[in-house]
Length: 368
Image 1: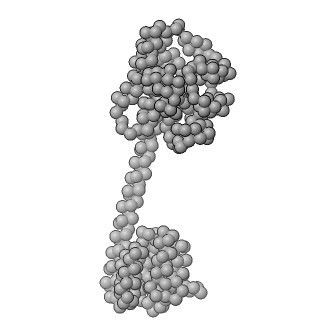
Image 2: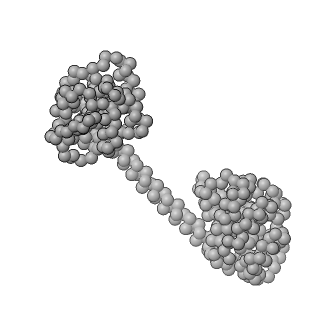
Image 3: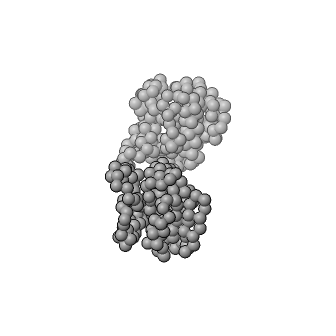
């Protein structure tokens, strides 16, 4: 056993067996430190401090290796209670048993130490064998408890990883489904990607502008809405190919059938029957309402103004812009400038002025 002193505290040490094998003995009486060291030598590495401040410094340097603390209450400089208070304030040694070793007969003082989460109070004079058993039992109990915490944390991390992987898989399935629907109507998967990206850009601009309904949206919510946006036309899965891919103008009856893709899309999402899923909740609303317009001339419900959620309004505008700038079986692709002019002119229905302002701000950055 090697011993050496500094001006403020004494150290007694040996070779560490493994992490958390140090017992820190804090007592201003050298004889008491010696007695306690003799009890645990050979089984633990030992550190000694003659006051609370020296103990605190040792704690900072060895906090991950300390298995237990044997602490006197009355010492010059920092008392035992001052040391305990500092530990709890800085959340140090929260998983390490601390024993009060004292001859103080003041019950209120001893009881107050339990407010600091100590493991036990051992009164002097003590039986060495009894003291050793009590300390070792508490060390093992704390280690078992910590082991359970570590195992629970490991399992929680594994669950979080699996949940993230499952969520990523769900997004890929959603993207594949949306792309399949677009391919069926003669379009490409690029359309659904553009809708998601355009939706995100417009929503972030609306948030910056402080527009009602978007000013409090978090990045997480905007991401969820952007993913949900790619399912805006999921109801087209139930529309006949002869209508979806008709090169000419639709008849009144055909257009009425085409409009049902909104209600059928909402019904399809309802059939998934997954409760409290943010993406699906947004997707249902968007699928049902992305053709609504603020003047009430949209479909299927003829909603007006703020009765239409801001995300459904945004997706409606994103959908109109992307449709205009890409060729369809019934029309050629228009330039960015012409598409913007048509939207501002109301040829795609009426949009709220703040939405148009945000759209104009991001339009130069939208992918074609």
